[in-house]
Length: 128
Image (cartoon, helix red, strand yellow):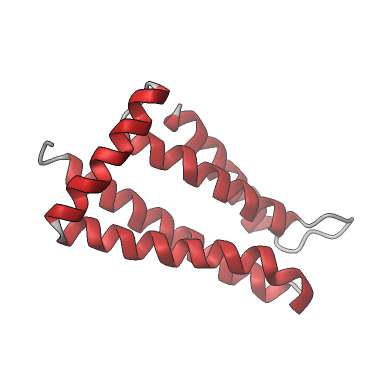
């Protein structure tokens, strides 16, 4: 483990968790109560990412354990540990973009839909 690895994983989770929270709250304001189920799960994921990011930055043993698990997956995929996180969060931003765009003629939040889609694509490209 390098000294650069610890801040990288925690920072990625904190930054993307914050974006997920912001976009989830923005989307849920435009959705009806019945349509909020998908956004609620994404919002919960954002809170989880922030909590794990804080734990990664504060706990050495937790960071070592997570780094080992991410390295196992990364070795299997042929990428670095931080790229595994980007591959996961790329899918979450795609879900956010779908919820913001809606399934019918009217977009719920075009700004969030486009930005989430671009972040999801960028995460997938950087992760792979």
